[in-house]
Length: 152
Image (cartoon, rainbow, N blue to C red; front, side):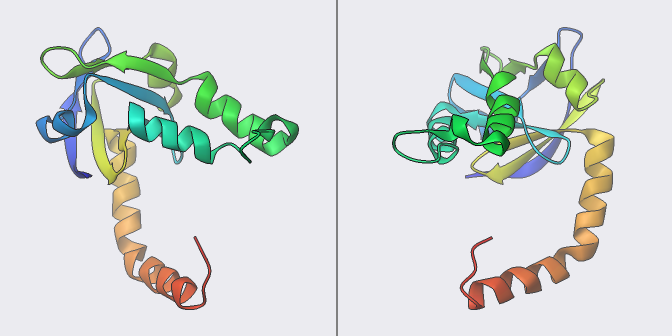
């Protein structure tokens, strides 16, 4: 399981070090793609396969027939890159993805169970502070939905 929060420097070649705890679980190649909430997602190849299957609407995968799904898939798959983890644990963040979330000299890497999120560290600090303020309300809402049989 990928957990924890780390702030790491981005070097002049757009490389960032994955935390040692993440490297052990992620392997030698990972997929980096636009995420949600102004971040990037990094998936293992195995997890990426699962995500890809979930984004298909059926076993025959006719997801291209729905405009909303086409748009979302273009965003997720179109800018996705398979990147190698080098011998000292760094990955290259493609320039297009770096610009997309405004990364400059450092990034927040956040383990979120099945993926790593990469954030502009200032945006992450603000997001995290705001999320912390409403965590109890969110917990109550999720508990109510679970009790009422709704999936979130």
